[in-house]
Image 1 (cartoon, rainbow, N blue to C red):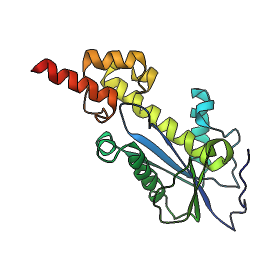
Image 2 (image 1 turned 180 degrees about the vertical axis):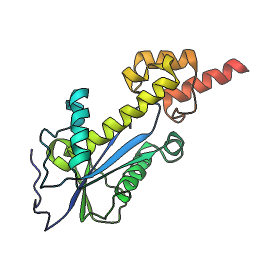
Image 3 (image 1 turned 90 degrees about the vertical axis):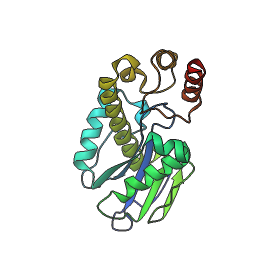
Image 4 (image 1 turned 180 degrees about the horizontal axis):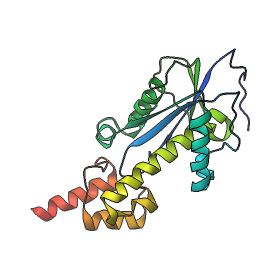
Length: 204
């Protein structure tokens, strides 16, 4: 697979956008927007899921130190419940792009949908593997969300967020059945909704 576009920054300033955290039951969905600097390239960029945590952290530091611009956007669990996860993700992507210090000429978004943005945008399926800007965005978003889950793990150590990152693993589902649902959960997601319904029946 390949994806081609003009690389000369004098022709067009490209921004990559990606998200992390659509599947978890708890926490924000996190997005990042990154404009790389051709004068300070970062080697080793790829889909964040293919990188070991230590490598992701190292690349995060390199990206944030050397990119021409970068920003993070989020949508909260309450916004996810109100809008649904797709539209909350689109909102978080828009927030990331709007947080940049300038409007890029064109935004390249991982996946098959683009949010409403103040500039032209193109979706790129498997963009986190094909487009360096999107790869960089996937790494920034992943590291940012993992750090948020580490902070949540300190507040709620019994839930094991540092290991499953909020995804619906067997251990996580057992924990919410045993410990309940706190304010950071996405109440519209089926496993969380089922626990809330069970708790409601038990109180009757």
